[in-house]
Length: 230
Image 1 (cartoon, rainbow, N blue to C red):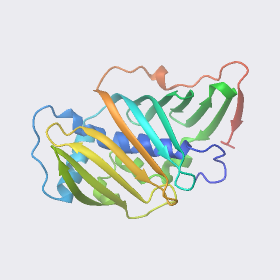
Image 2 (image 1 turned 120 degrees about the horizontal axis):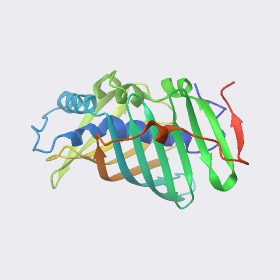
Image 3 (image 1 turned 45 degrees about the vertical axis):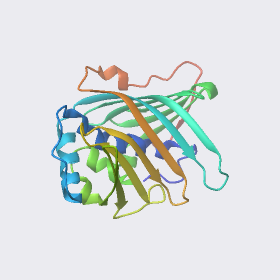
Image 4 (image 1 turned 135 degrees about the horizontal axis):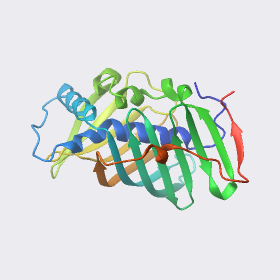
């Protein structure tokens, strides 16, 4: 499990964002109107079935991280790429560049302006996120979360997700679903300290061709590597 080895803030919040997004994006597969679920189990089954059909995806994102104690907000934009079984590339463009790459065995976090790269084992993050078992198709949402259907406003349904095994990084999540297309428009999750991670996704592309080289990190010359795989 990743504990003290995480020396940079935001790594696990990004992994949770990747996990949530990929666990829920499959709803976008359906172009025709959906049979709207009437209960929590229906929503869980819908999400699970959609995910099983997805092979690759790309989406642009807008992210706001709110720090409860200081009230400071961080605003970021970028792109997320994913390829089954679990290859991911999370690129933050603004306000400063940052890269997160999930390879087959290793996870890299790269800070270009600092010429610094952090290296972790993928297996070390497996049991940290309840969402990872969902995103790999091993479990429906209802296996890991209590699902509470909430408001419906102008055809958008919000669902509250309460983990059966809360962690410091995740005590609650909310997702917003377009009820006609099944597309996930937004997600919000809260950690133990009431910090918020609010992410909206746009321009979603599913089952597009993505070369495996996109999910390979090559250390640039002059970059210092902090290796936590030992």
